[in-house]
Image (tube, rainbow, N blue to C red):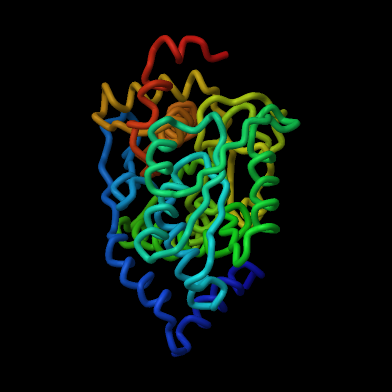
Length: 336
């Protein structure tokens, strides 16, 4: 058993111990009913049986709902957050939106730290849900904003009493959420899978999902999908325009993922794939979904020709926040 498997088993076992639940933990537990299994649909594709798991059906609208809920729930169970806690997090949109909704429902204060790349849809939602929104404007040494956002989070945590950083980039609870919830649903829905294509940003999704799928389907190939300009898999940093995919740092959670291959996709390919998913398959999805679909199309030549492989990819969010970017032909044409 690896260290990560031991940690996951230990964390699951620890929560089987019956301890008095705090009122906050009880309120968070009641939210569990909103995280119902998300559906998968089959797409018409040559040479493969391709399935998309529609994570935008989650209650606040993205796969990040799972990690946001799980992190808050586990922190409350351990007594790390309480009624006076102020939750703080850096986000490009989805994770902050999920935290904003869940903290509001249980009566906690939340301060999101965002940057100019955030969709106006997400920013508008956060400013309606949160009394305080911090928006950084200075680019970091990679040309992005992530390092600047993280520095601002640390400054806020050092000055605000009872601050709690959910830290989606390192928190093992994010990985556990996808091991237990996202991958648990996949394993219940599929008797076999040959490939899983998973877009990467903070690393929690691919870490949790890949480990569970490797246990359930020993021969599955897990393909990590990243965007050009991201440094996660050793690429040179470059200014990026589509949020929710890639990173200016190597998230520690990625080291726990069980990855067989990596595909890097340009932002122009992402935009084209998002538009194809809508016009050819009826899926109105966001940038990370399009990036994964583009990777599948490129990777198809490596798949066996003697049988139809079973292939799965995740659709983390809906296309609405991307209407003025990847779904705008003029905007997409300006991409390098």
